[in-house]
Length: 328
Ligand code: BYC
Picture 1 (cartoon, helix red, strand yellow):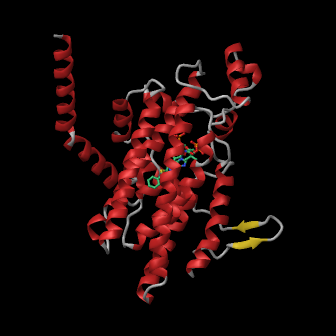
Picture 2 (cartoon, helix red, strand yellow):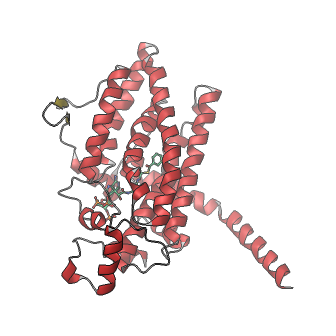
Picture 3 (tube, helix red, strand yellow):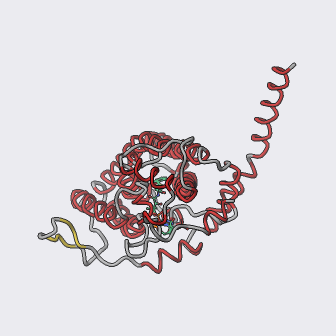
């Protein structure tokens, strides 16, 4: 079922002439700002779009634990280690809320995980880059969680109730994540010249991939038009990307670090920053599975799932035993 959903991805917006009476009434509810709940009637394509986006979001949270997990045993102090551990555990929680939200749309968790493990389902491109130094923990919290917040705050108001409600809690936790990242960057930027160089190197490597997190340019985004009509998306990919640049440049200046973009400059007329062209060939290459860590990430997830089989079996055996007792 999932493969079929992905293949039939929406490419154009439904117009009034295309709509049945039921669909028109559904669209009117969305336009009036009424939340759609799991048992409400919904067009099949709305359901499929949500399953696609929510499950990709869930997969991103789960795979997103891996780059940071790489530094737990090498965190520089006990305090840094406990904060990093707490953050990574939060990401697991986010994945679980999101899988639950996707399940309300009638897809099973097994199907969703199968799609991830077989490489059919996407997860955020950002998690296919390696974490080479401790400064990367700072850059991820600051830039990646910072971008995630910008993308996710509007999702708290999206049209599908369970997704919107999950996002409220997720966003609260993400802001702690972004602050812990910025705190690491501040410590390094104020540290020795070597530490400051580490911070700059991490910014250099994470800046462009973070801008890619917002997805293709509006002109290339196949899903945006229909998702906006359904109020799954409240702002376009480019609008949110611009917001990220405008928010982050002054933060980099405060740290005394340089954004690795020679074309970055303040545009007085627009009241925001102009920035250089993103290397879209790199983005699409990562999406095709050819980023620096795509294979390693999937291999690690599949192994973790297989290693956990005994535990899942034990839970089922326990539940069956309890059910049998109750029935006796
Ligand atoms: N990476 O038509 P478009 C986190 C795909 S987790 C990979 O614009 P849409 C965090 C897109 O799926 C971050 N694929 O699509 C966790 C589509 O392909 P399909 C994850 C991408 O859905 C731990 C195709 O490109 N956040 O924050 O309208 C630690 C065309 O794109 C990417 C979410 O998932 C990408 N970067 O818009 C720290 C948020 N971009 O599916 C942090 C929820 C695009 O048609 N998701 N694609 O085969 C969204 O807001 C939207 O799905 C997107 C894309 C803005 C990402």
